[in-house]
Amino acid sequence: MSERVSDEVWMRHALQLARRAWEEGEVPVGAVLVQGNTVIGEGWNRPIGHHDPTAHAEIMALRQGGKVLQNYRLLDTTLYVTLEPCVMCAGAMIHGRIERLVFGARDEKTGAAGSLMDVLGHPGMNHQIKIEQGVLAQECAGMLSDFFRHRRAEKKALRQQLQAPVDGEL
Image (cartoon, rainbow, N blue to C red):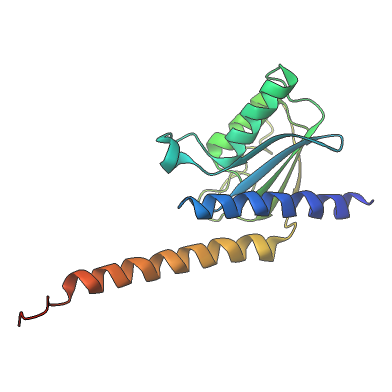
């Protein structure tokens, strides 16, 4: 299996995890940490449910991977994420020494792998991560767009419901 085909397989797995985040009312981002052909960590966004601002999909997958390997160094691993990582997650990847990052959709607002800023490619970093972007980008971006469209529609319906007169009132 070619690397590109393998990347798509793992990204589809990350998309399934992103769907779990959506079902839990979280922004749908999923992450899979792979070493060789083995999943050693999985995560989906859970900051709301966990009351934890660090509970991003990437962090959840990295934490699980560290427990599986019994090491904070996640050598020879690839992290697949449906959305370009933020600064916090990029920093965790550098500290964990992952080898490779594969992400789907770019994040122009908070992306730290080249969109808003390039933390991962900064020459001053003590570890460089290989980056592949745009794998299943349309599916990844589409899920996020659908989620936010749905959320806006729900909020609009709630506002309209709250503004509607109660039966018998004028």
